[in-house]
Image (cartoon, helix red, strand yellow):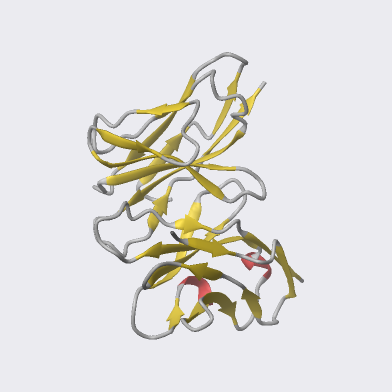
Length: 113
Length: 116
């Protein structure tokens, strides 16, 4: 998990509330990603960004938003439009070489209360 | 299009016995293949990758994986399992062609349980 900091580790959201998950990296990686993990479903891509000020929707972007104003930071906002937000959220980065794998943060567990 | 399958939701093995976690893939052209491990409430940790060259890839914590192009498989193996190997294991595949988004596809994960 070194080099990527996700905060908070646990987050509780009330119905109708927006919350923002933080992801900060000091690896100098250009590409950053947000995944959602649910039991038995593996990892599903929410959003990704390959360069500052640019980002793309993944497979399950509805109800989520992101920004990439700095290379080091890629925050994810879970909006009230996301009807089932309870999940484990993982941020990842990738180095510039084509054959690089991902480096993952330690995750944020979001629970709706 | 690319896809990866991990046919077993759970693998049980006794400590000291060899273990295998299966992975098959589908890509256009040559693949990049990865294995990751996840411990409870943690992020994924990189174990090993196949890019090119020797079909037997050695990785962290004594794990290895064998790339088999004819069977489109990349099974994870370890000669002698430890209780501490118990975790969730993910296989991932990515196409090697340039100009794409370089986003891998992950399998659904296999839970490895090593019994004392």
